[in-house]
Every structure is written in structure tokens, then in C-alpha cells.
Length: 142
Image 1 (spheres, helix red, strand yellow):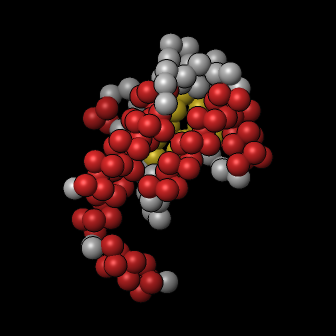
Image 2: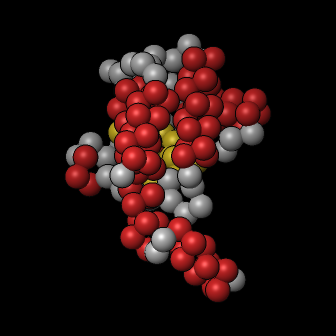
């Protein structure tokens, strides 16, 4: 298993390339959440952008029921999003963006979340998917 993992890293161009992909995928997710954010609705759990991770983004849901969002994503599209941990499990969800994550999987996940938000008639500020696609496009051009 270790050799297979090292082969995948080598095929991608080394650790720097892997870390860059994680950075771009994280920036894409954060761009989507930034566009979706509204007062009383979605917002970043980590408010200081300098403290946000390239591994996972936690989104606070405000008035939006995170459990219902999770169920719609899973039942209607087969996309599993992580629910917040501990006492925040009903008020947040998580989007992972490291490991074997690529543009298609991130855009598919974000598109599913955005569609579920619309199905719930939840307040969103705009198309987070479009914002994420723009970030990914810039990242692919690097």
C-alpha cells in the first residue's frame, strides 16, 4: 500500500504538486462558501482566512438545518458531506478537500450542496460553483 501511495505521488509530480492540488481545491471550496454566505445563513466556522485549512472547510449553517442538507445530498445525489462534530453537529457541515480529491469531485460535491440548498429554499448569495470553477481554472493554468 505504501508503494502504491508513493507511486501516485510520483505520477502527480511529487509532493509539491500534491500540496498545490490540495491548496487549489481548498481555495475553490472557500470561494464557493464565500459566495454562498449570507447573514443568518452559511458562514465560515474559521473567520480568519489565514487560519483556514487546505484539508477541510467547516461551514456553520445558521438557520439552515445541516442534517436536512446532509440527507438531501446523500439521498438525492449519493454525496456524503460531513456533519459538524460534537455540540455543533446540527449547526455545521464539513467539506474535505485533501487526499484523492480532484476538480471533478470538488465541483460535483459543491454542485450537489448548492442544489440541495436551493431545494431547501435556503438563502445563498450566489453561485458558489461558478466561483469554485474560476479558482480551479486559474489553478489548472499554473
